[in-house]
Length: 493
Image 1 (cartoon, rainbow, N blue to C red):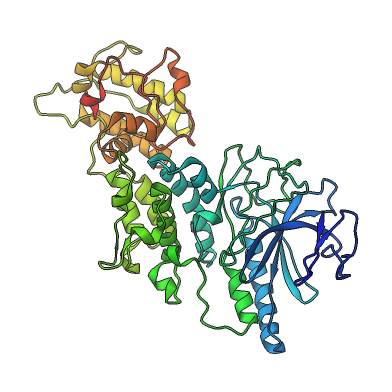
Image 2 (cartoon, rainbow, N blue to C red):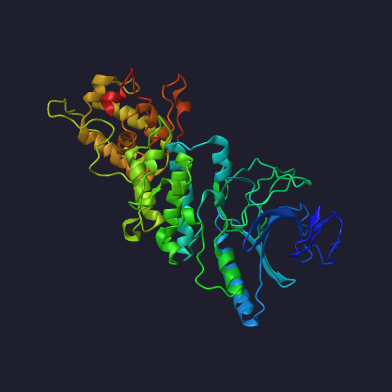
């Protein structure tokens, strides 16, 4: 099917081969290149269509965004057009980030404004929530780690998204193929919902990267990364064209108080991200979790029975959604630091040494460990750490350490080993990193293993239980391959 995008066309469906609409007579292809297939979104300021780019042999999918221009005042319309071109330049720059859709084209046609953007095959977090029910703490940690660098990037480019919510975050699925076959059941988003790719389509074609000039884009892995869509420029442009002023952009239940009053800051996006996390954790609409009488969030009251959130994550979420801008995190970088920071006041996973404990007289040589860490030889560094721990309790390298051995490890030596891991991993790995996570999950060993991607029990293939690369979960290394016996964490926590 080829779909006519002319507003008001009463019979927009046309055959694939049609050049002109059989109802209104207008050209069906935009710029004689982009063939609309069918609508995938509708809002108060325009529509979104799935399309194919027929200028490229593989005919990859793309997204057409059409903005409504209703004003008859030439000056107002011209202002909107100028703003449209300015914002397109900004979107083009932002689209160099791999987690933001590429801008492929922008133009005017038939007195309408159009953006052509990369099609993201995948599913919104809103759809995920419907399918899997609520998110667990590990998924929230992963969400924050994945989206915060994107917010950091757009804020550095002086852009505020203004509409962070589950519907505007898509988990890209590199294995998904979008089915553009004609479907009788076309569904639309609510007229109050901004243009979004909230109809997820299964494909017969592989979604491809649609921009050949994006040499600066980072290579994508096979992991299902999150993509941020639907920046708030569309409503701003169309309201300008229609003569409206004082535009408030966003979805009220996710908006920060200052944004509702017409002022938006980077911290406003962080607030919306925090509310998004609360909704995903509880499955409860945001407004139901806000105590209007006391002007505070009571989201913990809505956690499902038997579920809890660690103090560490809870404190971060509380600060993200603080009503006062100045008491919130002021940048995405600050939130990332809070997620990954290691406090010097927190002791390593190994207990602080009591005065009566054995202090090893072994004089360790840290040169080899430092060299391995500097060269990112994580598995070799992990083995060297094991060997050094054995030396500290006068055991042959490669022997397992039991509860009593752990109790006798000297703290000064452990702190030196820990500091090397922290320094060369950028704060991702180390005993004290693990200690902070262990405390954050209420000293629950099973939750701790879940957070740092450890199996609860060692297998006979211990090397395969762990991920020896920098991209491993925060706190994943050093591994616990050197530990013997049961309930050892009660002595090492």
